[in-house]
Length: 447
Image 1 (cartoon, rainbow, N blue to C red):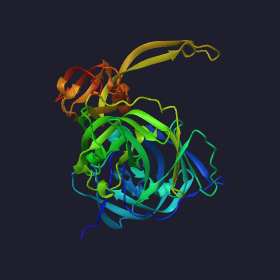
Image 2 (tube, one colour; image 1 turned 45 degrees about the vertical axis):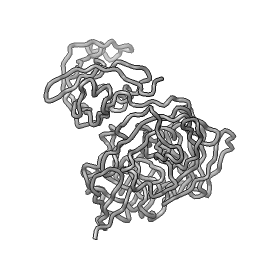
Image 3 (cartoon, one colour; image 1 turned 90 degrees about the horizontal axis):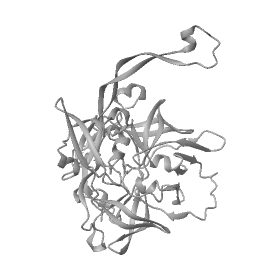
Image 4 (cartoon, one colour; image 1 turned 180 degrees about the horizontal axis):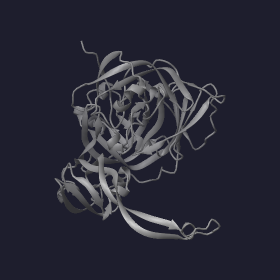
């Protein structure tokens, strides 16, 4: 009989996998350690070492178990022990995914180490979020780490600090707000408020650092939680077992006690994607990375508190993708680059005593280099890009007359989030031919 575990994963969020085994301990006298992270698309990517192999993991609040994927080329080094087969199911309409539960792994995050860590190893090559991030991602960690420490998340300086709760000292912070967290199956929730159609509504929200959106809300007409006339249907993210779609809109306000954000992006996922997450009937949605990054946080699972302190991102306006294009890093392409042949005057004259050397260019040669290739994987219906004639599968060659090889994935995507109705020119490769398209970014919510 197959054993199936349900997981809620959306834009790298996994939940409800039971209780962790083992305990993290910090191996230094201070009982505290600072770990720098990369902030990519509002997501926290931290270095994690598993059985001596250095990997990159998403730090996701509320995750019950650590999961590892996209590691087939390093399987032997990781020494993943095949113990019990498990079938995982989450957001998306695909089939359950097979995983192997592995015990007694050594997991390190900075100076924090757990010598008896359970992992869920997914061997499915289709479960690979790295192309959507444009950076390596091998797994997700959350509850296993949060349960043992007070965790500070500093979004502005891009570091987390892990501290033994027995030695942690809280700072006096008059500008901060402290909220009590409630836990359901080891996932943290807080009560906040949203303002929709001039009505202020109390809501219970999952704290979800593993989501890149701003807010998720679950439509409930009886509470007044629903979209107004300004919304569009869109791809919301890739779940564990398939893509998730829904409506994108904005709400007037979102408040965490005295902190109020205005004109906040919100996503209303399709009800068919919420079969599992709605098992917690009191839940009204999620607070994700595009809101959380506007605060520096102190999270203490043991005393069930979270402290919010607004940072320099707090007043940034909420932008969204106005092109309708979703890209992923799809392999590599060959690019012809100039390779200049230089020589310094000192070398040219055969002197070893020059204090100031002039560089002389002897000639220009060209070389072929491998650069990331970016392809269109989702295209919003009736979006500016679709109306212009772009198609899923098109490979971007240039944007606004500049080759895409000079940009990383996030830099290109950011061009689609500009506030103004900017003109975008794309040259793409389709079936071996180069095609040019021009469109203007459109703000659906513009008054």
